[in-house]
Image 1 (cartoon, protein in one colour):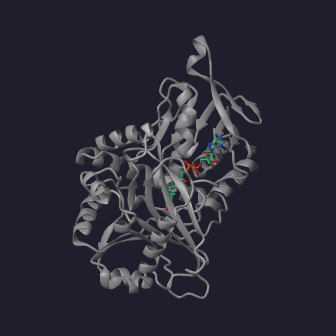
Image 2 (tube, helix red, strand yellow):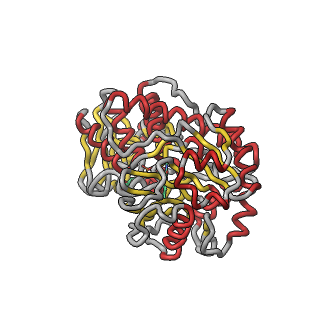
Image 3 (cartoon, helix red, strand yellow):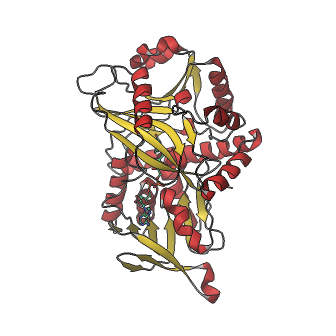
Length: 415
Ligand SMILES: Cc1cc2nc3c(=O)[nH]c(=O)nc-3n(C[C@H](O)[C@H](O)[C@H](O)COP(=O)(O)OP(=O)(O)OC[C@H]3O[C@@H](n4cnc5c(N)ncnc54)[C@H](O)[C@@H]3O)c2cc1C
């Protein structure tokens, strides 16, 4: 089958590889000069099934109110802007907050993340992939009893869904990751997920595109998709062509993996995808000459920060702001990320040269990605809206798209 994969972020590039491996004639298209140069570029680097608790939960609306107008809020919403997409997304977010709905979303995400982790492990056994990978688990640290208790409740749901995750004392956490010694006096407890991993998502994305190319896929960079053409009459449920600034492409099937831009290209087709950009920041510190960088990946849930060791670098990433598609960096948010990172790992790396970056997570209201056939279309598949967990979910999502195209039942069914 001829398949067009639109978007060469971690989702599109991984999908292109999984499809090429099954013998499809794949064309991977991206507007950037190379794969993985947008949200997948300098993310937190975690493969974190244990981070599957959706933002939308019973306590979130009150927290959002408390954070209104605060520059140091972990999750910032700029309601004051007139942005109908944000308000519509916000209303749908509220419908995902009741406890039963959050629990449903969490279970779906854990299942998809575990499926994805297993697909990634299988992939590593057959393809030589070097992306600063560490399989040393992920530690979640907590400073307040209330957050620890909330994490325990979420953790129970995650373990019920099959995740390996257990509580550890502060002493055990420090024994596992001595670089936590500086922050230990302010901690009240931790959780450990031994099966979680970390690595460089951008390198992984590039490798996926390269390996897809070796299997015969065409990788078209510097190629901007302008619109998707729907058939007429009886062919109305088909995409008959994809138009780009470099010309027209045709395929038997098209996979939409344009990250936070997916709703913009889908809208003229009558599809209103509930995906909104959630801007996050990262710093990448050189660790050579510093003795306080962790080797175990860390999640600091209260500050919404994650830390991953990538060879001689420490990636510190986090916070979220719902403020549209603007990709400029706000100095206050960079300073906040720097402050949080330094507080946890004061000797973690070269804070004089922190190499800041920001990217737009393609967030859905309930955090569950849009994965499967687009409503009303026979040959258009969605693989988008992976929010905070794009890399974590990439291999499982790619496998599901490959299963659907092959007529196989996917291992995880999504709502
Ligand atoms: C600060 C931060 C930390 C994160 N940490 C983690 C983490 O630790 N673990 C994890 O699993 N996830 C993490 N994420 C989330 C993860 O990075 C995203 O979910 C993931 O990168 C989304 O991948 P994507 O392929 O859908 O989107 P993208 O990587 O944005 O890819 C979409 C691609 O589509 C292309 N495109 C868009 N429009 C067009 C067009 N018109 N024509 C052609 N091409 C187009 C873009 O150029 C882009 O390459 C983090 C995100 C951020 C911002």
